[in-house]
Amino acid sequence: MFDAPTGNRAGVLLTLFPLFGCNILMTPDTLYALCWALALLYAWRALESAERGVSRWLMAGLCAGAELLSKYTMILFFPGLGILWLLRPEKRRSLLLGGLLAGMVGLACFLPVVIWNVRNGWASFTFQLGHGFSATSRNIATRLAEYVGGLIGLATPALGGLAFWSAARAVRAGDRQRRFLTAFFWAQVLFFLVSAMRTRVGPNWSMLAFFSVLLLVAADWRLCARKWRVAALALLLAAWMALCAVGTYRVPPDALHLRIGGKPVDMARMEEFRGGAGVADAVRRQLKSRLYSSAPHLQMTQWRQSSWAGGA
Image (cartoon, rainbow, N blue to C red; front, top):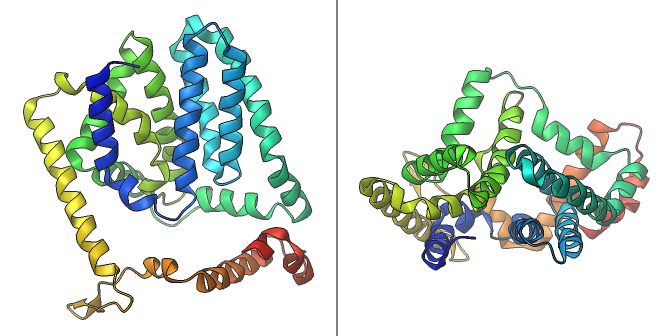
C-alpha cells in the first residue's frame, strides 16, 4: 500500500504490539486476525484494480464468512466498508456492489450458525447481544473512560496516542491508502464505543482495529516527533519483557502460587490452557446456564443433542 520501509515498520509494530502477543494464543482471535487481514487485502485489491474485481470481492466475502463461524465481530468488516463509502465518494458504486456481493457470500458461509440458532432459541445470538449491550449499574462516563483509556493503555500510551492521531489525521487526508485503513479502525472503535454506553467493554474486544491503524502509524512514522517514536518503541519492548516474565512464570506445570500482600498473583483464566477436559466441562456448564436463563422454554434434551454442546 505504501513502500518497503513502511511495510517493515508496520511488521515490527504488529509483532511487538502487546495485544497480539497475549490475546492470539488459543482463542477465536487467532483465526479472526488472519481472516480480517485477508478480507482487508482483497477489498483493497478489488478497489485498486479494474481487473478481477468480482473475484476479489468474492474472496473478501469468503474470508468474512469463514471468520463469522469463529467470531461474530467479523461483521464489523461491513460497517468498515460503509465508512469507506463515506470517505471515498469516487468509489461508492464499486463499494456498494462489491460490499453486497461480499455480504451475500459471507451470509452463505454463516448460514449453518443461523440455522443452529433458529433450532435452539437464538441461544448464541442472545448471549452475544446480552454480552455486548446489557445494561450495568456503572455510570456511562466511567465506562467510556475505561474503554478509551484501556484502548490507549493496552496499546501502550505512546503508541495508543499515535494510533488515534494517525486515524484522525487519515480522515482528513486525501490519499486513498490512509482513508481505507482508517475506515476499518473507526468501524471497530465506534461500534464498541456505542456498546460501552450500555455495558462494560473490554479494550481487547476491538483489538483488530489496531491491525489497520498500525499500518497508518508506520506510514506516518517520520511525521511524528522523535521523542514519541522513541517512547513508543521503548514502551513496546518493556511490555514484551513483562509478558515474557509472566509467560515464564506460567510455564511450569505446578505454579509457584506467589502471593503479594496475601493475594495470589496467579492468572486464574490461564488455567483454561492447562487441560481440554476442564475447558469442555466449563463450556457445558456455561451453555446450560445461558440456555436456561435466556431461553427457559428449551429443554435439557435439546441442549444435550445440540451439535455445538456435543462438540465442546
